[in-house]
Length: 102
Image (cartoon, rainbow, N blue to C red; front, top):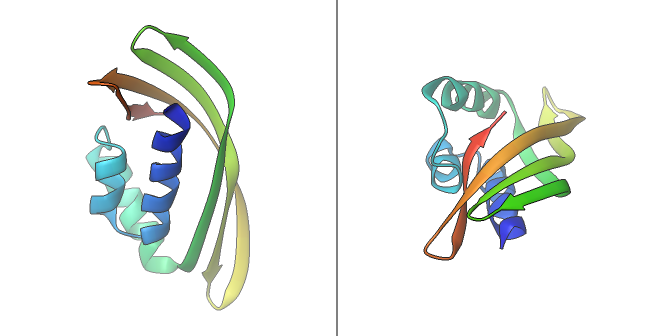
């Protein structure tokens, strides 16, 4: 299920562990990994809520518009930021995985 792949990504972000993020999103680039590493180092108590707003499936490829929020603590102050990205997912052996995020 496509939503399961998006929710796995959200939980991986909440772990604040780049290796878990890479497992949920194998296409994570070195630059994206560094951005997450830097962000995770500056914050605590990360909660991520993501939902698919638009979805187009063509065979074993899906294009999803994903939106949501991230809530975290930075410098002892609660913060909230909107999240919005387009994810391309691929289905292999019946399992959907995130191939790219832009």
